[in-house]
Image (tube, rainbow, N blue to C red):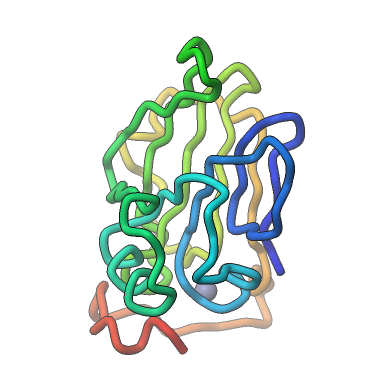
Length: 168
Ligand SMILES: [Zn+2]
């Protein structure tokens, strides 16, 4: 399992174990290491993911569709962090260039500015998006599994592949 809960917040990133007080979940993509523990009986809160991931998620887990909220690359949403609508979270989705529908999340709230990469594939220019311009990121949760010169991957010729490859 690769995800976690941001300490002292109701926010969970690719983490699917019940945690008291947590009710805002972000799913970067549907690979098994990022969805481990997610069950059809999930009722702990809302799940934010891309429209591609949502479609796959509902098909695979038969979740209540009202719990799964779409946020697509380039989109920013405001999410209430409490029952009184006083504390707000601004979340922006950024294409992770990993598998179809995969996202990075830029979170901005009282705890600062956090970038959660999930799995992403860095290529020149991928982070040159207006969404990150003039941002000071306080915390970055970076998946650097293959971030070593000994790993050489060919450049992608096609940016988005057919969705049937996404669940492998
Ligand atoms: Zn992955």
